[in-house]
Image 1 (tube, rainbow, N blue to C red):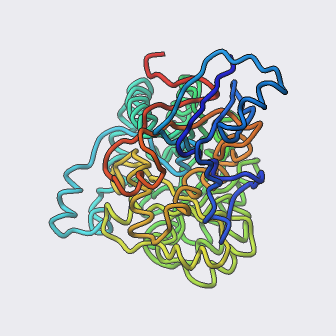
Image 2: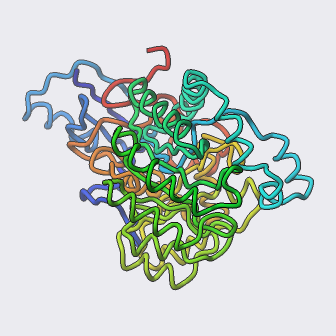
Length: 419
């Protein structure tokens, strides 16, 4: 089926030169077309101005099956959420209340809460329970415009539960039409049973978990939480080198709680992305500048646990590609709404509206190696985009806290959760 959108008040392509991602000044240009038009099937076939349509249709003799008049509407690429933890059981609202009352994230974790609280609940849950809970959460994310996801394991911290989580992610890929990639995060924390024998657990990750995950083809990436109180540089390096040996690519939780040099390691080892970066050093940023590692910033986490924000302006000025994502998880950022993350990115990270839009679409797509398919509205890419019930993309930021999505389109079909 070939569909025509015409009279689009604001058609935001984000990119128009087949860039893999954008950096520096190029992030200021979102390739907006006023009074735009779009012809698509499962792929985007043509993009231009409505006044150019008649000649285009005559010259190409195209058969159009459906026509939509989108006067007063905005069309943008869908959001790509490149750092999430959608698969887990339990909830941690009590910890949230404690933080509001003054407890720190680190204090709660040291008492056995935080990640380990979710680990206990996730180990007890069945695969079916985890699947149903994650599916419900992701459907809500799609309502707010997310069309591609990265999902991590990491709430098992033992072989069987980690595999269970990764199987759930595989089922989600099959059940949903959006793009999903999976990450093995067995090195999210140290399980209680190995609290006093860290090296033994790292042996388990390297000698049993990674080989089995690779053997079953359950993950594309391997992640490690390298930070104060979690994994050291040497421990992370060992895990990453083993993952690379088994064909897994690298992502990294880096320098969220302190500067430990994790982002520098990520750059040196060729990680696809280094994420968080609240306390990243200038030395690490220079290493990232000289690599292809994307800086994935998670402003919702800083907001939710009342931490400093990553130095986005410095990262931007170094021409390091910036992506932004939710970090959806039960303890430090419990929202799947990418629109509110865009608001945090402008008001708290200091990005412009255009920079935040590029970071949440094209650059986040690059952070999961999908920017050749989604992230911008260019001929040949998937016809995957959002129709917004507003006249300008600026309304996403100006009229914040509401859902501007009128419809979500995935590869040329309007998404419905009832399908």
